[in-house]
Image (cartoon, rainbow, N blue to C red):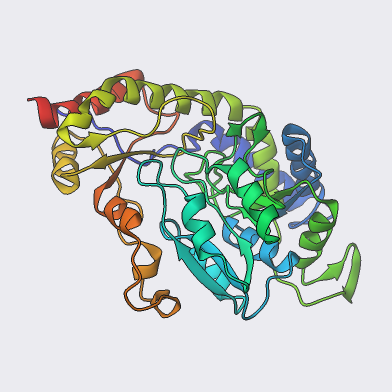
Amino acid sequence: MPLPTPFFPPDLFAADRRVLLDLMKRIALAPEQRFILGEHTRDLELRLKRLYGAEDVVACGSGTSALTLILTALGVRAGDEVVVPALGCAPLAACVANLGAVPVFADVDPYTLVADPDQMERRITSRTAAIVPAHLFSVMADMPRFVDLARRYDVRLVEDSAVAQGAVLDGRPAGLWGEAGLFSFVQVKSFGMPGEGGVVVTRDAEVGRRVRMLRNHGQDGDRRFVHAFVGHNSRFDEIQAAFQCHRLAGLAARLRRRAAIAEYYTAHLASLAEYGIRTPPPGLQGRCHYVYTLLAERRDELAGHLRECGVGSHVYYPNPLPYQPAFAPYTAPGDRWPHAERAARQMLSLPLHPQLSDRQVAHVAAAVRSFVLS
């Protein structure tokens, strides 16, 4: 009888259900009737600021809006070019396009799957306003090289660290390498919550100030109806902020559990490279362990085998961004991104979340191994 091992945990917030219900009642009945951008949001921002050593943390409506706010705060405008990875989530390109700027797609590293500094450098022109390397799955991009690249070409550096909360590279947390970074709180992320939300993190107080105004219709601090510039509605929910403050104490343990599961997978699956199944790079340096993604030459067959074994799997990004109809107009005829194309054909993600039992983790690894060794 297969051991049921879903890709997404069905009981993600079950242990905190009572806390969430109590918070909803308390905030809903509080005399101040403040449901957005109140004391709980400020508390969450302050806690994350202290945790990561940021100059400022600004909570906003989603990871996507966080990226839009950063690009706007840094002065990206219509006609500018912004270099982004060809492989990744749609907001990488959509946030740029929605500002009237032009997303320029660079190929990724064939093994780590993250933005390749050499490929990004080839796409920089006199019209480039910013580069946006993105951490992907369980690997941080090579941020020291991107810092040097931004300095040499005098372009803005934005770190899409949406999936990388808790990752550290050379002693510096993800999100704090560029002029600003971001975390996403969508439910399946490392610090997910039951709804949309995210934060901008930055070491630049002025960037933080502008983002803070932009998220609330461009209003100048607490001066209501005084709009310094055209902004957005990207405000954070007080119930969610209080819930995230409650869950923050357990984040480190959840991240350790994710890392332990990833380490187990690598220890038991790295030897399958000769059979056309390649694991992510091992280790803890610059690793976020959000999603554990294999490269499998027979990806669809492997997914079917895992399904028969009761193991859920998931294909993220089955098409590179330049091949999406929405972004094809931003590409040149004959342009290619071979590493992103190959990855899109071969990527398969395994279950990786703290709710997995040791027995389920072992079952996942055994199921993958049985695909080629039985």
